[in-house]
Length: 196
Image (cartoon, rainbow, N blue to C red; front, side):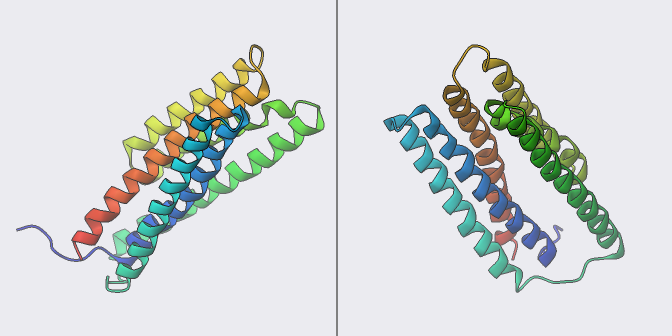
């Protein structure tokens, strides 16, 4: 007989937190398409990114609300796993932020500001690799590889294309990754909501 116990509140809140992050990053990365100019395709892509962000935020709110009726308690194994996962996630996220700050500072300070956005994409891509291990999700490996390649190609493309062209392309390609991740979380969240 399948387990019909509602999922713990921590899981619903964790997914909601991830959705908020994907909403912010999808809106941000998709708006980088405007570096290509306010062409209809760039404006439409930015609008799609904003719409996806709204969907992710709505789902996050639904999960937080539903979480109120979910049990708080985790068994000892889940508590330990959550503690370790949370600690590792915090370390990786902090390291990512620090690396982005240092890289942007160095690139801006040395007159290579055109490399900032693709290098940020490269760092973001690399940060997904340990997330695959933390959350035991194969999707993170695909996203890591995609966004890392986007960053590398963006860095290399600057020798042949303008900064605005490269930044627009990097923004679009990275927004596709964050939107995919957010879509995965929306579907996963729907499964949790159906189990309540």
